[in-house]
Amino acid sequence: MAKATLGIIGGSGLYDLPGLEDMRELDIGSPWGMPSAPPREGRVGNARVVFLPRHGVGHRHSPSDIDYRANIDVLKRVGVTDLISLSACGSYREELPPGMFVLVDQFIDRTFRRQSSFFGAGCVAHVPFSDPVAPNLVARLARAAAAERVPHVVGGSYVCMEGPQFSTRAESVAYKAMGASVVGMTNMPEAKLAREAEICYATVAMVTDYDAWRPHEGGAEIASILDVMRGNGDAAGRLVARLAQDFPEEHEPCPIGSDRALDFALLTAPAHRDPTLVAKLDAVAGRVL
Ligand SMILES: CSC[C@H]1O[C@H](OP(=O)(O)O)[C@H](O)[C@@H]1O
Ligand SMILES: Nc1ncnc2[nH]cnc12
Image (cartoon, rainbow, N blue to C red; front, side):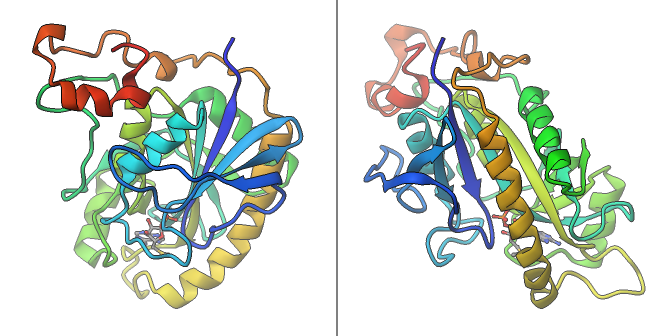
């Protein structure tokens, strides 16, 4: 059995993980570029935890400019097996008010200017992605949220827009009509790349606002979003601490196979693979290359 390492990606307002014992910063790069910040490794209880703030220290990277490949590659390199994304989001449902944590189980990708795969010319792969979220992680998150009395719902669809501007009213109404429960700007391609790297992934989408679909209200505004984010940040800290305390030391095999996603995914015949790309894939796909 492989050892488990719990990765935490902190989103807007979450640039640190209080409670990380024996913490040290890891000086690590990747063949894809530099991660948003040096990952921080430490322990919570018996769990090995690695934290990475996706917008970088001081929130330097906008959603479109984050090097998602570098972030996922370094997390894989340092042994992360299970990854939790903490993300602020807008809501498309009355019953998901600001302060609600949505443990989403689906994504709709509306981004258009991001590198969304580690694979490509010279090494083509198609990983399964119908179920993008690891259900065992969602179950653990739900138990941790209940124990910490954090308001949450299990299930929902997160639409990822390009940003960085918030949605127009027409876009907001359209995303709601598409069936999205919440909207954000960062979980794609992060979730796709985690799947390619065979890392189990789940998102805690923390509602900060109702976006722009309610006709008699203003749209998303950063001042009130920041206010809500502070409260959400406290709750997220408690949720993660509880999750980590109860996290198993051995990696739990993923019930939907996220950790074996490359078993049948590679299409390019070995003799036709580009050696330069294959070398870059050492951490992500070394198991099958
Ligand atoms: C602070 S509002 C907009 C910003 O917040 C979300 O980021 P993250 O998912 O990293 O918490 C959203 O996607 C936008 O990037
Ligand atoms: N309304 C919204 N749209 C996109 N990203 C968000 N993050 C927080 N609120 C958001």
